[in-house]
Length: 236
Image (cartoon, rainbow, N blue to C red; front, side, top):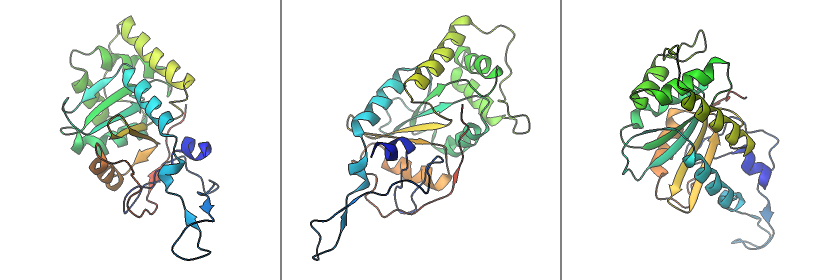
């Protein structure tokens, strides 16, 4: 069910979560006519069986190779990645949800630019800052939601190499269809074997449960799942 995967619906843990781009018209997992404790009872395959895990791992590998800013302990066994535009209001909200975990989850932040012409320079300014982690924090903490722009002042002269890196991130990720909106979140569920991605804002409860699963689960659907609140992503 490739459409299911592209839509990135991840109902995980007891409260679950629903990606922002999910649709009520999504096809449900097909029931198997065989097996089951009672004759005639349909058995629904685990959602994990519907995922193209090879595709998800390829997404993770490509994304981790793109220029970005790393926060959190380098030796953490919990790893994530986030695609963000520095002028994206949904990304700023996602940063606030993730802030409590920045000291224990290793997160690779990949800057892209599509919100407006200033996005490229602001993203490049973060990369080129003497302390990119501090620059990222300033941009997100001081985000101006009235003007839809990041809080990091953009210097008059932004290094060409940094602009080129942001442009390459944006171009390559769109070409590979890794970026269709922001934020995009990637998760290392089990090193070398299980990776997943979500598009759109994840709320605090969903993030807490996702973080708990990082680094040690082969099946994020091992608990019963129900829908939860989600917020639309910003699309290029």
